[in-house]
Amino acid sequence: MPPLRFPSGLKAALRPLYHFAFRVQLRVRCFLNDFAQLTYNRAHKIPPAMVRFRVDESIDTAKFLNVGKGCARLIEEHLQTIGSTLGPETKILDFGCGCGRVVNWLMMQAPFAWFYGVDVDKEAIDWCVQNLKGAHFQTTSPKPPLPYPDEHFDVIYCVSVFTHLDEDMQDAWLAELKRILKPGGILIFTVHNAVAAEVLDCHEHDELRIVGFLCHHSRKLTGIVPSWHHTTWHTKSYMVARASRWFSCVEYCVVPDSAQDVVRCLT
Image 1 (cartoon, rainbow, N blue to C red):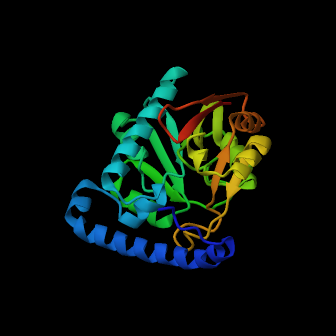
Image 2 (cartoon, rainbow, N blue to C red; image 1 turned 90 degrees about the vertical axis):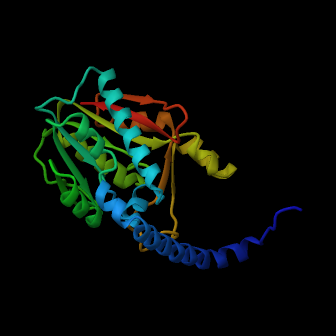
């Protein structure tokens, strides 16, 4: 039996209703998840379900832990590739740290390094302050500047942050992160790759190929994520050229079996 197809006008009319229903069921699922795992989450320092959802659009606890651990390992591998280590004097910033999904693992691997985390999500930052001791966390504005002096950090990493910014915000933050990196400092961030772009239709693929940048606006998560939180895709050539406006050496690194690749920038 062929799938049901709705006229485009009807689909547009029903979309707000679908988005509303999605948000309602999500809040219910998060409440039930928190209630069911109340004792476990407290014992193992797992953030509330909705806070985890705002990080990776999932409330699966195992996924939250596994992805965080994998991202931390990936960051360490890229630092080792360029001969950098997280030593006792190293200052590291997790830009867009959320509820500490990645920094928690890195802190265990390099307990004597200086870790910092910033995010616009106050609930996530409050959770980090209460549960992840030994690092410095702050809630920040969606726009620069950050509360740090020039040339302050040795390493800055951003996991799935530039995947949600429009072009103006992206450029503003690249400039700001360059400002607070020391000479010889390293910026590591992720972008959506060809695997993630498989959801796009043929017209969107053409736009991405021609322009190099594509930004999707959606009301699906209204009230759950900020209004400027979109979904964006970049081509390799675009991202390398764009980041090279601020950084002297930019490398685009394909991550096998992943929906995101790594961009590595040196000051």
